[in-house]
Image (cartoon, rainbow, N blue to C red):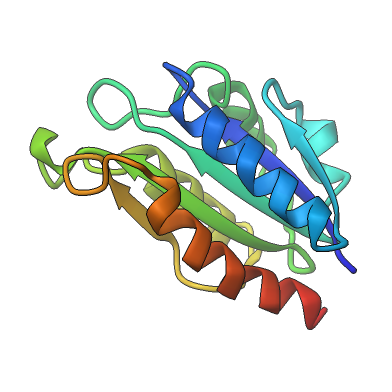
Amino acid sequence: MAKIGVFVGTVFGGAEEVAEEVTRFLVGSGHQAELFLESSLEEFLAYQQDIALVITSTTGQGEIPDNLLPLFLALNDTFPMLPQLRYGVVAMGDSSYGEDRFCGAGRQFDTLLQELQARPMVERLDVDASVNFDALEVVMPWLKSWAKQADAA
């Protein structure tokens, strides 16, 4: 089974709750999964031969939450090439704030990871709070498909 780091960006706790449930599912499926709420560059890079899952809400004008921003900036500043890293992104947002801001944090993280040559396992999941009040109703089916890719590793 796979070694998976779950890196969370949260403002009001919604993304954290989703990440906790996701981590429970992954561990229950036999994976070695660890949740990071205040992650460092070193903790993220420890997964560069494995799998990273970024679960983040979006704040303000489509920005990355304060607890995940230091990791994003460190990756962007040091720009380590990560061709062995496989990853997934769950982007949480609200489309009523406008298309250019919707899921902005997850979109930014996905773009950066691709620039670092990391390999997405499946397409990023954008969760719209104005459509899906319970994010897990959308995340869990996506996660099961995503986890099959991790099983194939």
